Image 1 (tube, rainbow, N blue to C red):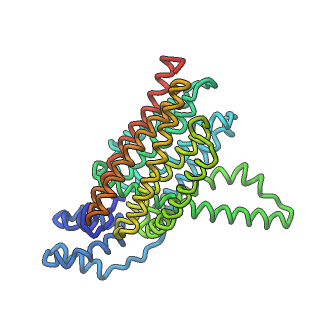
Image 2: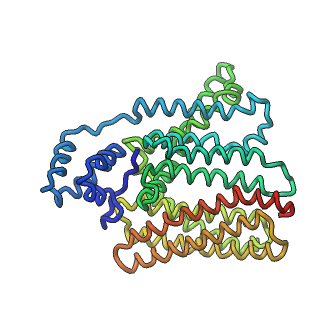
Image 3: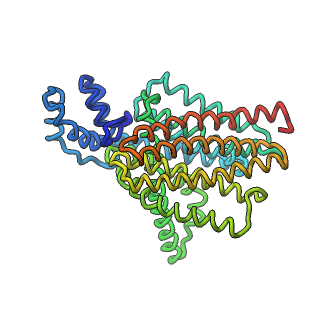
Length: 431
């Protein structure tokens, strides 16, 4: 999959724009077509009237007119790749059983390596990535695995917990690197990866609910004839079924049909106003209840989870809908949501600063402080461009850029927490 782009009415950073720019590059056009034929066809016909005199455009016009776009959900090669991924993930999940290891110890450190490396490998295979380019993310995965499994248990430090929480995020950025193929520096490719994230979450949720219903029904039916499946599912099938759901979702999202691509923006548009209402009510209830994140640690954790969720929702809402154009009302909702998020972030920053001043610096507080500062900076930038886009037409490209250009900053911070915090802890035991 050479990542495809989405058409926007302004023509910026869009698949339609890229098609026009690459009319003299047959191989590049073919790669775009193979990545998502239906999106390519739609974008091509939007620009064809303006380039109908071009001989290459004429050839593509005839090809697209006479080609069937009815494709299976999954090719045979994708099915084989999925089978290999699920098998390997299941084997990795069973390592505590095979080696008689403590499950809590193993899964806290290695849960990231059951799913994410498989998805990275799938993207490398799908993009036909060269061996030299594939070596780098592979080395990152190996080094991360060695690091986290060598970290000592220390009940007086949050280092292991922080590393375990940030490592999946760090590895997921490398999934984006593998997803982007040879165009990882391009803003449009990063947009495509964020769109993939939204689609993947929706598809994983749909598949998870489906598998859960099927499992529940199956267990109930076999219970009627006094055959228990719970032990089998827990001891064997669960190790392969659970990893299979997100892996299958990833394959389906990047398949030619990309079935969820039209669902995710709709879901985001429905959820956005609901989140605005819930978040407003939550802030009001917090003030009336008298509970404070300044002294309540769990309350502060919830605040930060809300922040991450809202930031993700803003990104998915915009990038998931940009190919169809954003209405003024939807932009207004996103502005309201981002302003509410800024209020929540300001409270969270004040709370963590108060806790540091009152009880001193710890790795956990430093990690939370750094994350809050980054999210605050990102929210201010995104909100500024959203407000400008409301006052004047256009500006979608700047909003997109403000969302995706911040991704390397998050990646650097997760790398700092994952790799440098354990080093600081080793050099300064009281850190």
